[in-house]
Image 1 (cartoon, protein in one colour):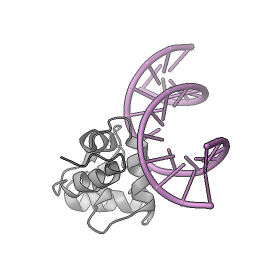
Image 2 (cartoon, chains in turn green, orange, yellow; image 1 turned 135 degrees about the vertical axis):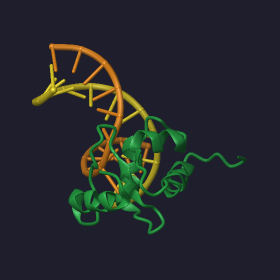
Image 3 (cartoon, chains in turn blue, purple, red; image 1 turned 60 degrees about the vertical axis):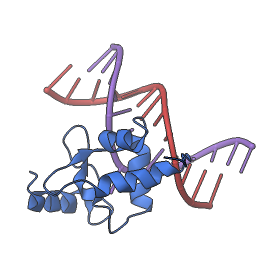
Image 4 (cartoon, chains in turn orange, blue, green; image 1 turned 180 degrees about the vertical axis):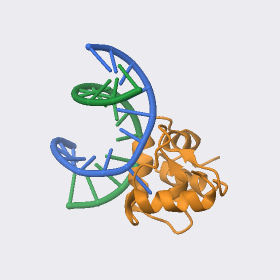
Amino acid sequence: MTNQRPSLFSKKVYVVVAKIPKGNVMTYKQVATKAGNPHAARAVGMLMSKNYNPKIPCHRVVRSDGKVGNYNRGGASRKLEILREEGYR
DNA sequence: CCCCTGACACTTA
DNA sequence: ATAAGTGCCAGGG
């Protein structure tokens, strides 16, 4: 890639999350790593909370502990519910 | 430019 | 296994 601007991190995050297949979940660490910053797990969630994109199924992004984490759209309960519908328990 | 906040992760006790 | 503390990155005021 030619343009490797630091702010690209956010863009990459959106792409990675949008690439998560249904019924599958990825940890913030995995997304951050794929985005190019394995130490930016926090930044990932932060971007989501402040920039919720309809094309970004952030509900498919879970914590490394296997927990769902948080959600700015009805709370973790809502996220859990969605994941359950996706096939993730 | 400086400070604070934030949907996490990892290490050590 | 559980609890607490520390570190990382990015964005907003």
